[in-house]
Length: 169
Ligand code: ADP
Image (cartoon, rainbow, N blue to C red; front, top):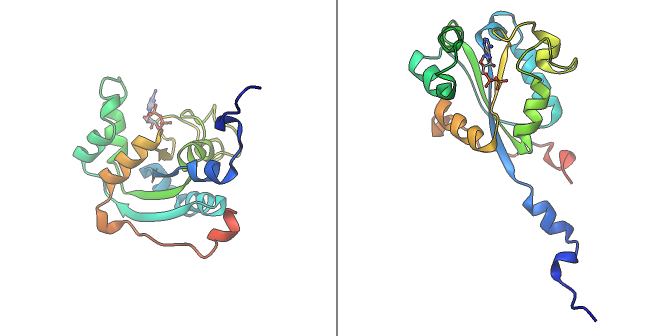
């Protein structure tokens, strides 16, 4: 008889513990702030069930915008992008949760709002890539990097929402 191997055994508690708590950097861009969409956008993340860890209204300095978007430096739209992001206050947020990075990207929708599905933030609230209202980190590593870039340690709040046991078993 063949020896049984442990890899065949299903261990739900191990699967659960492998679910990684992530953080993502979400920013309502200057057009979203000017258009009065801050509450609507925060509300979508709150209702979904993610945890807000940090929040501020903030005029982004040019150097920070350049650091944030350094991977896009070679793009033709880069100078316009830096002007856009620094054109008025932004609302910076850190959200935490299992799978929050990919889920936030889904809630946000495609980069081009005309391609973004109805029901997504960009799909419902925007019409042009150059005014697409919101940013969300594109990977867990970038989530960490961007939260670290936009927030000081003492601006990040460690807390347990009262609803936690009603969101995850
Ligand atoms: P996303 O924000 O969806 O992750 P990217 O990382 O590709 O998208 O681009 C970052 C931001 O740069 C976009 O959200 C948008 O504000 C701007 N951008 C991207 N492509 C263009 C473009 N072709 N023209 C103008 N702005 C652009």
